[in-house]
Amino acid sequence: VSVLVVGSVALDTVETPFGKRKDILGGSAMYFSVAASYFSDVKLVGVVGEDFPERGVEILKRHNVDITGLQEEPGKTFRWGGKYHTDINHRDTLFTDLNVFEKFSPKIPNSYKNAEFLFLANIHPALQLEVLSQVDKPDLIVTDTMNLWIDTTLGDLKKVIQKTDILLLSDSEVRQLMDEPNLVKAGRALLKTGPKYVIIKKGEHGAMLLNADNVFFAPGFPLEDIKDPTGAGDVFAGGFVGYLHQSGAITEKTLRQAVIYGSTLASYACEDFSLDRLDKLTLDDINGRFKVFRDLTAFEV
Ligand code: AMP
Image (tube, rainbow, N blue to C red):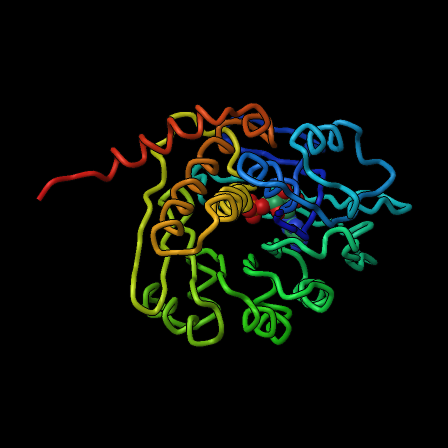
């Protein structure tokens, strides 16, 4: 009856060409949970420090996210800082302060163990393996990762990928991981290492869903008003996994719809800093933009 997510809960300091914000709510699990909550019940596992603001807990509660598994530990909350270039697809990480994350060991509460879908948000692959050892076979395991782990923790990352049903990664990550410049070839090679599906994210240029037989491509939404793309990947995952769970079936059709719902939510997330836009969506907003997506790519032969 629910989706379980394990990932980071963070205070981000973000600079984009459109403004600068300090200590705003972020983190992969935070972005994922709020996005997925528009479709499904979400159970979150993560860690915060004593300085985590009440508004962070409030936003999760407002979206009915189960936070039984959100541990509070002595010390400071995980912090990340990034600065975007004029070409908003590129950013530099300015700092990563692990703080309470350094000693984090994910514990899955008993009340979470019946979750049907598991989303392993971007955290250290060793922690993702710890999570996998604690859950009873979920119906679907979806995993996200980042270039840092390809560089530093490849062995554990490969073990996680082997157990993953659907792997999400960016175009540059899949090229790096498979040492193959062609995305379709790199994706197909990756499919031989475990996952049934691979989703390659191309930032503002959309996302590609790939399995051994099919390729589906969703464009990026042509947004005129981008303020902050932080978390767009996690929000994509939230919309994708949440919708797929709610649809009750994993078929080529629902997977393709889920990619469009993920893209829809990700586009909204970019319209403001932190979770500010995502927090205030309605299902009418979401379904309205879903239809615009269909019109964007519809053509007659
Ligand atoms: P994205 O823009 O999809 O890459 O996600 C950005 C979010 O990931 C930010 O809110 C960060 O707090 C979080 N983040 C950045 N680096 C890490 C890391 N090493 N481990 C966990 N979460 C991270």
